[in-house]
Length: 154
Image (cartoon, rainbow, N blue to C red; front, side):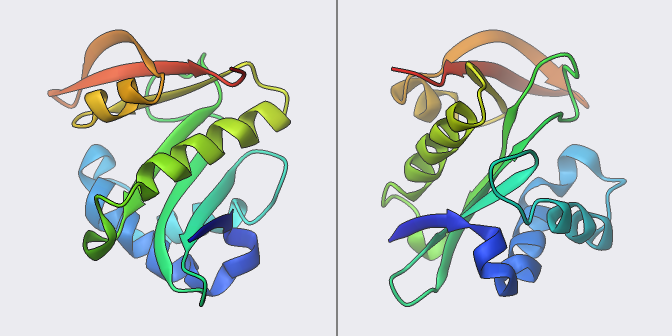
């Protein structure tokens, strides 16, 4: 497995958009699949925001994806954000989400950011094991979330 930029695997964009819509659409139900696809097209770049990373097998099969965004649906004053980390169900529990997350930290560092933020309704303990610290607990649309940060340098 390797972590690459979606810009180099643009053919996977429709699948990543569908995954994000299915997994995270409830967080902002006004966003359509078409709008999500358009937003992902803006992330087909390297070294600047937004960008999307993909985990691919050696033969190029898509395993997972994660975005790095300038803003997200909460706390607009913080940047950048790790967003929409998703691994296909058949490839979970293999360290792929962790690898995507840590590559995002490295990418944010290379862009000159000292911290990377995320929010999660379900995976606070996973991120805590990778060095993320909970800044606050909040709610979004009545759903409890943890807002977390991680320095981009060791």
